[in-house]
Length: 503
Ligand code: NAD
Image (cartoon, rainbow, N blue to C red; front, top):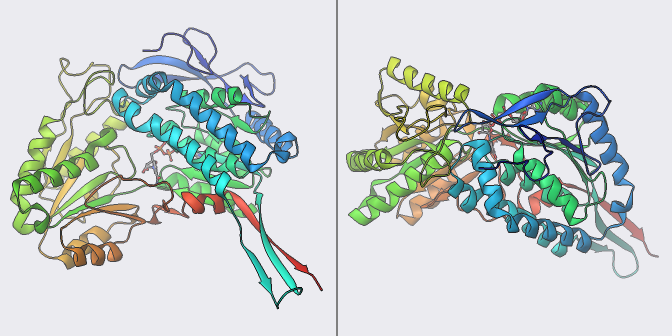
């Protein structure tokens, strides 16, 4: 694990994660003595770094730097130059993939192998994808009234300073998902990563500086949500807010952004259904493949992905076979230190593990049967870590609290349905609507169910297959707006129509 300061950090014992304002590491913006937040490694409980604890002064300085940069040299950069910058930053991250994966594993508790396979490659892909999008972007032109009358053409303009606020579960993956399109469209940014997983945001700041980004275009303020996130959202110099996090926080972000009509995108919580029809498991091989998909959907990243399938809905006549195999597979998952060959690492914190365990107690109180969900033995995982074995909750109504509230951990509630109508009723009864995965071999059913599910994303016979050109986002209390592909370009730009009278 990392001994010295992480990329972009400052030396110290433990190392220091500074803010980045105007392309420079900064501890305080107003000369006061710095305050600190301990950055804990959840798998050991050890303090791995000290985070500069920002506040309104740093937010103000970062927004000021970002505003100034809007009229600096950056304003004259062509789309091709911005694309080259993103490609250079992508290459720098890719060259340090192993180091970044280890950093993400240490900071979040996730398996390093998962970060090396998913988080960091996806961060690199985000930068490259939006470099390509900037290169290939085009806007419409409408000629009206015959030759020589009126010509309408559409310009994309940067929106201004973008506030980009991210959660702890996919730190670099989600931050680059916002930073790349914002820069591709010529904006400047102030980022506020989660105080629980700040390390790779600091590394991104260093990579962008090394790639040649002008001063003030990328700014980063570390700290707690109420002390940094809230003043950032409310700041009059900010024109756009892209927030990914919990639904309750999203509600206060929306309220704070509303008075000044900031452009707003909210990617919030989920309680996603994995719906398995009996026709999908009509052979042993099919049963194996479908259950593998359901286990992956349930427990990847310790169940801490907004898209995780935390409700398993199974058709009655296949229920025993599917659930039996699911429990077998679940029991075989290896839980342990992030750097070991494991399927699951540590949860993000002890407090979060207690919240998840609280739901397992609630499940028992509500009359359910809990399988798994124990703390692993010291032989499996270090005692100081926030480890928890995966759990399934059986025998509860799909309307109970455990089956309808977002737990955001390795817990799946299992339910039985008898026909398609009941499957849809169960899938749609929660207040969330982010994603769903449906497993069936019947083509007409696949289309029918995909159309009737209340979710922004429906996977059929797969889960977490992502094409970055597609719209991403949720309905109901899972969010407002879509990002991805052209949806990101539209969100991170203002389109202006110009009408030219030619006669
Ligand atoms: P959170 O809402 O607690 O925090 C998210 C970010 O918001 C953090 O950086 C936090 O410091 C900041 N914040 C907190 N209070 C704020 C305020 N008042 N104003 C502005 N910013 C504030 O979420 P979390 O616990 O970090 O992440 C888990 C949640 O994120 C889950 O609900 C999960 O479903 C959701 N999530 C959603 C998506 C998606 O794409 N829909 C992706 C990942 C995670």
